Length: 204
Image (cartoon, rainbow, N blue to C red; front, side):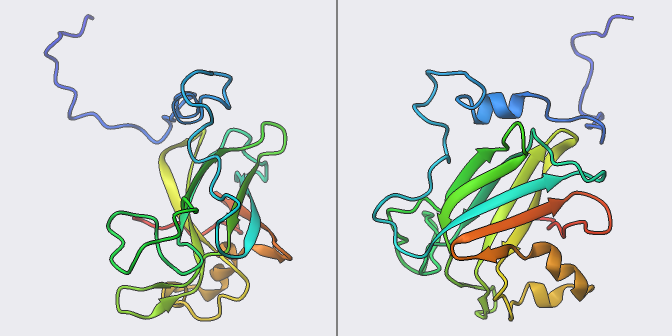
């Protein structure tokens, strides 16, 4: 039966089975998809330059599904403070962030391994809403097949002993799902979408 042009669409919402399809990568990382001429390089592909202040790190992220398989079509965005704990944002009220650090990155997963790699710096501590300092962390946003509304989480480092967000978690054992492992400038973090190691996600 044909649907009239004035048929209202607002009562219908997306179902959980709907995904963002291939359009996320085409729209957000066209060079990765082989679509040239839109940007010289995909936005967010580079976060640092030779003058960026702070401890350089390589952060590898792998998004893993409930069956233990890396998602090779994931797209991950990160945003973080600079080495002094300042965000590169117009509404940053505490001062001017390092102009040689974007504070934001976007990378598509490797089609073979599912690894997403960011060359960035270890962030400085950022104040919580009540003024307490948060442990250095990186904010993460994930989309992939089966994820239409992006998932948000954080990545901390192993020295995150005191943090007002981590301390509020009801099940303290789950803090481990937010801690990157590594050292000497190289860190790895697996994000599990389901299962006993399911990562803690944030409702922003």
